[in-house]
Length: 414
Image 1 (cartoon, rainbow, N blue to C red):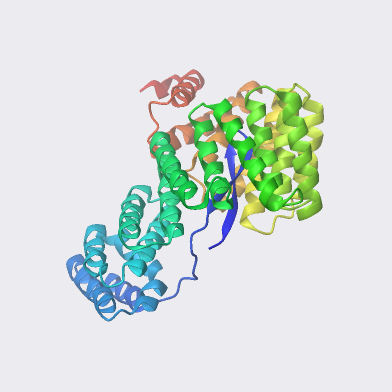
Image 2 (image 1 turned 60 degrees about the horizontal axis):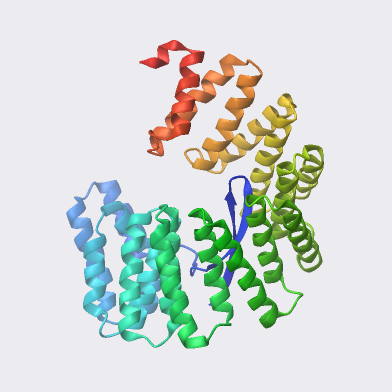
């Protein structure tokens, strides 16, 4: 089982964290998909679709065709997503769990992961919970339990249920320490995710203490020259920014930057993340010109983004640079940058996301300061629509946008 680092933008600062990875497979056109497409074209009733598709799944379960089941995980998710039949599928797996519990647990975890990536968080929770229950009663391999617990905690975090996520991480840590003692890379990884949740709960001192412990564990197990050491230094630096301990933050971030440049290269996503964080630190110290220079360096390095990870950093860098330029009253360039990032977001199917909302909100602020009322009104309308889609009507920012929209055009008071 491998581990991957995921960049997680937080208040304009990119915070690196370690997540347990989900298994990935290329989707293919299975028998179930062929049936669904045929039924769709011929308007076969949904109940008949369910019966046919689940008979295929149950037959494979009955004959222990686990490989085939794993290969059609994408199609199973498509099926339950379209037909809302999670409970039927879960019941089918429960009936077979005594015969091959490890495979059922892995499959449930895998389906939960697929649903997670489809932003179906509430549906994913039940699959992760069922996987944990099966692993706890039937498997001596703690890594399977920890993986599903971590995935469930990550899902709670996405739903902003931070206390539930914290409880899961703490439980996972206790289990790992009982088995491996105080120092193990798995322990450091889970502690890293716990530290992020502590930060989201506002416990920045606790978060910083955890990052210090993680750094110590990793140094003892990996040595000084390792990318995970840079990861811990970066995370500590970001935490120190929020605590306004700027000199310490700069020391940690510059160490992380040097290490990432040496080990990974200057245009690696993690190097670019740290460079972004260093620029945001300079902004926090009111050194906006110096921050602008670092952000322009970062923008130039990731302009030729050739993968999704680099593209996300490119968009984040544009946002951070536009924020910096706005503070320096360089409004026209800030506006042009934001229009560019919004165009990229539109092309990458991020039309109705919080990320799009943030870029539009900053653009609205820039346009309002330019007294560009026509463009500002159009952007404000888009923001109101995204708020409704995100079901965030009661947020303070929704009220601010609506208030500004009414000032621009009183008829929107209706």
